[in-house]
Length: 217
Ligand code: DX5
Ligand code: ZN
Image 1 (tube, protein in one colour):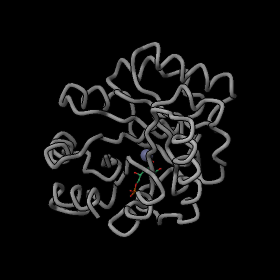
Image 2 (spheres, protein in one colour; image 1 turned 180 degrees about the vertical axis):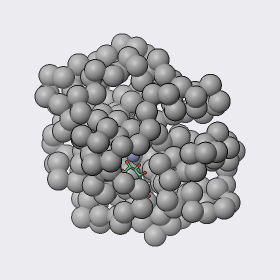
Image 3 (cartoon, helix red, strand yellow; image 1 turned 30 degrees about the vertical axis):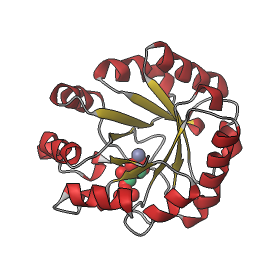
């Protein structure tokens, strides 16, 4: 089943509750919550207080994408703030600390994912795969919404899809960056099952219609 995860990075933060409600009522499966620290990526977005407020507002599934250095330091804080899934970047710390972050998230009873930036090869995640609920393939350089989809990432999506299938893993395959009506069919065909879409969803007035279109196109 294809899942759609609107990225609230492109939402109007002055009315975030309403924006999220519209997405969930429109059939969104996850709410994708992008955290940026100005170190791991050259931009700063939202963090813990906003997540706490959103958690109070909705029971919807919140998929937290941590684009921060050394995320192991904040696992407990983000879990307590209301994340349902935490995704870390494999490039953001040593192998030992990434493993610690993954294990800590699972111990706290939440789902866990790992992400690869465009220049990172799929095999960087192979040692962790058995532990993961989700793999996130970036199809833009992380940091900003509204960038163009990198079609040269499609083989990496295919590689992960094949790996997950061959190893019989219960692991979702999420794609983030430049996903819209034109690129959604490509990522699905490559084997992705969770599509993050920021600008494509929030530039449309009718959120339900675009969410359905992304799922079905
Ligand atoms: C980029 C973020 C994305 C971003 C996607 O670093 O991780 O989630 O919001 O935005 P679009 O869909 O506009 O490329
Ligand atoms: Zn993201």
